Image 1 (spheres, rainbow, N blue to C red):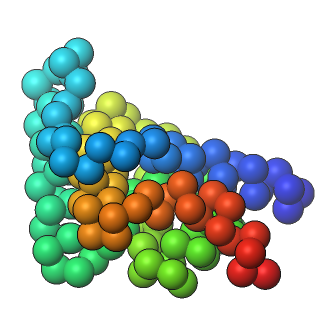
Image 2: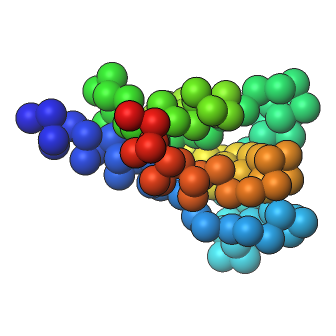
Length: 131
């Protein structure tokens, strides 16, 4: 049962883990989004900008979490004060997904600029060395 919960939590965390090393790129919505989803995407960007400027570093996740903290999540919080915040359970709609995508893309860009390295990629294996 624990393995199953960990796998579900890991899958929900991986939802935002897009490798992106081009930190100067501006976040723009996908061209195939309808107006409501573009609006949510842009709101996600604005929310990330606000949070970052207030020193709140977090990534939005959704899906079954069941109180399980992954080693990757623990590593990011301990080393970079980046938290993962569940914004929805397993049932999500396109507006939630659009907001999460905009928020996480922008927050990741800002964190890449701040730390001058991909801390998310580092966290994929960095937690192994902390044991």
